[in-house]
Length: 259
Image (cartoon, rainbow, N blue to C red):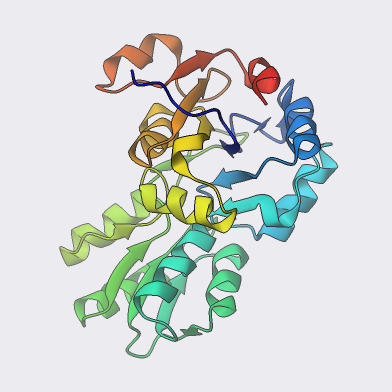
């Protein structure tokens, strides 16, 4: 492997890396503190589009993790940035919650169910038959289909929940139209995040707990990748993928001294 530049910027996934089911993972507080003390650019990323950065800042703060609002990057923000670049001042029919609708309003989009430019599908705990039917009919009538992220399930205390990717598959089955997924593993989300903090991929690292989203996205964006074993991917699963992370560690605590 070619020698890389020293790591000057860090991107890290949130669930499975910093927190797990509402509880901070051991070492997460020390990692965030070391990042802030070092003044190196960093972002905490999440494919979940439900919450605004302000919401996530408050939730993390209650867990003892002080992450400034400007250091949080969500698939909702990445989706809004993508649409603002593609069609500024457009219109969209949005299925999602405050994280997504706020991001869309902030770029000046009009949310409408009357001949929108896009149907934008995000995460929500209350997918309704009525809203999905409306989305299907609008796509059939010519609206472009965008989804915030391809995750098929999300975690909950009771077990797996259907997530954006699974609902997108339902719409695709009914319309024959595949969505464009903006979130991880699309490197677009990573590159937009790097641009937001003025960082460069060749001197940045991505930390995640999933081979199929975090590591793949970091790899395709040209970053060093670190897999932690506190989330989804188990050690015995790593070798099944045709690509690998730059390093594998037990938890975020093992990366504190690299900052």
